[in-house]
Amino acid sequence: MNFVYIIIGLVLLILGGNWLLKAAVGFSLRLKIPKIVIGMTVVSFATSAPELIVSLKSALEGHADLALGNVIGSNIANLGLVLGITIILSTITIEKSFYKTDWPVMMISSILLYFFVTIDGQIVQYEGIVLFTFLIIFLIYLLKFQKPAVIDERPEDDEELPLYKNLLFLVLGGVALWGGSELLIEGAVNLAEKFGVSERIIGITIISVGTSIPELAASIIAVLKKEKAISLGNLLGSNVFNILAVLGITSMVTPIKVVDQGLLTSDIYWMLGFAILVFPLVFIPSKMRLGWRDGLILLTCYVIFIYKMIG
Image (cartoon, rainbow, N blue to C red; front, side, top):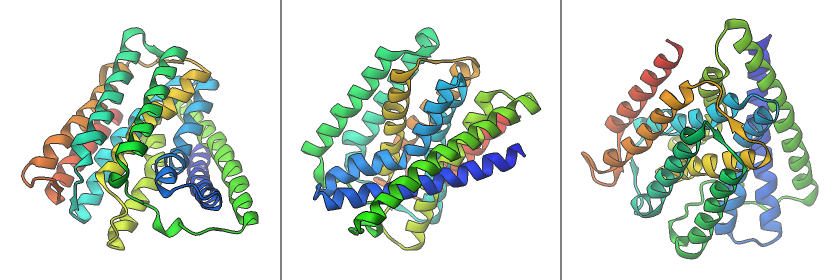
């Protein structure tokens, strides 16, 4: 039954995130908010809603390892699994914003997280404020100086819906995210207790992959449609948002205290390793391109990571 809860919970989170995204874009277009602002704020927040809801609810209920494991695992899955599969299916060209803003900001965010959790084994309120403030500064910088670098990754959602549909998607999205998080956390915690597996392992494998499914689905659909709907910048941006917004907001509400030391002795180093690995792959062997060989390297590393987690 726990597996059923987890599967239904994941489906509801994916549907809820998508409905919330439709509502957010619809309201933004109705209010004549510029597309650049929609892309960097509304869309980013909506697509990270599953991670935020799961992490916040987990932390509030005393399952901090689920909250932190979810974010660290999602960041690893975005690069190892999602990016790996995407570039195996189709070569992507890298924008200059990769080395100017996207990768440096992701690394700074990752290093900030590393120091915050390794110093005292927790992320407290003032550290959450630091993370969230860094996000605001990053968004202001992007909106002011990097407008050409922002890619509209959801062109099919750019339609102004009737007001009642916006409201319907907003309510459905909110209810689905709440219900999905309830079922997912219930199933995950019960599963961990039943099999004697730590919440950290459940969070960093099943839940993190589950909350990364929307990015994976969007990436594969984009490749099949031959659209430039996915880029390395979008995935790096998702990782930045996971750390600065999801953990920032969660730790401002309630401290995130590490229980399973594996998060500090292993998982966070894997996250930093994947973040660092992407940089040389972008330049070697083909400059500013990622192809199937790079994808195989990332996917192989991800499989090794998962094997070590459950082995």
